[in-house]
Length: 150
Image (cartoon, rainbow, N blue to C red; front, side, top):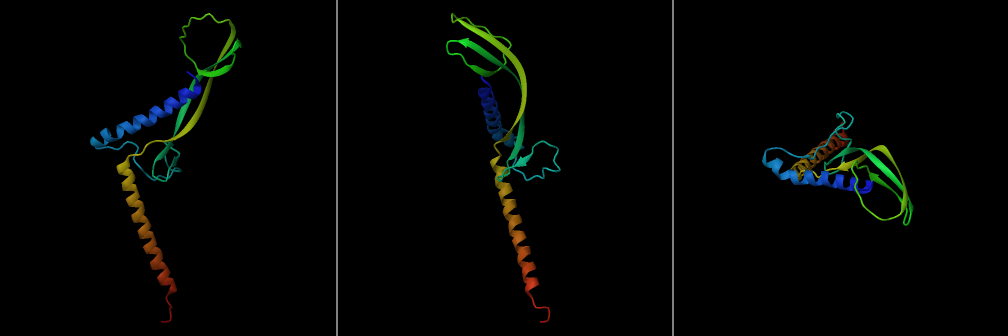
C-alpha cells in the first residue's frame, strides 16, 4: 500500500470510528470527544488546540516502516510504500529492482468529530458567558460615565 493511501485510510477510519461511537457511548452516559474549551498551556498534552466549535485537535503519531522500490525497466518509477513483510507475486516482466526500507515518524493534526449534544451545550455556555460579560461592561461603562459631583 502506498504511504499516502495508508495515511488517508488511517485518518479516515479514526474519524469514522469516533463518529460511529458517539451515540452508543452517549446512550451509556458518556461522551466521545465532547466539545470543550481548554487552556492548552496547562493540559497534559493530550491535544494541542481547540477549534471554534469546541472540537479538540489531536496529534496523530505515525511511525511507519516504508520501502522505496527503484525499478529499472518498462514503466519504471519509484514509490513510497508502507513496508509489508510478506510479499508474494508471480509475473513475467523483465526488470531490475532495488529496494530499501526506512522508518519515518511524523504527526498529523486531526480535529475529530465532536459530540453534537456537548457542542450545543458549549454554545449555550459561551452565549451565557458573553451575555454576562456584556452586562458587566455596560455596568462599568455606566459607572464611569456618571458625574461624581451630582
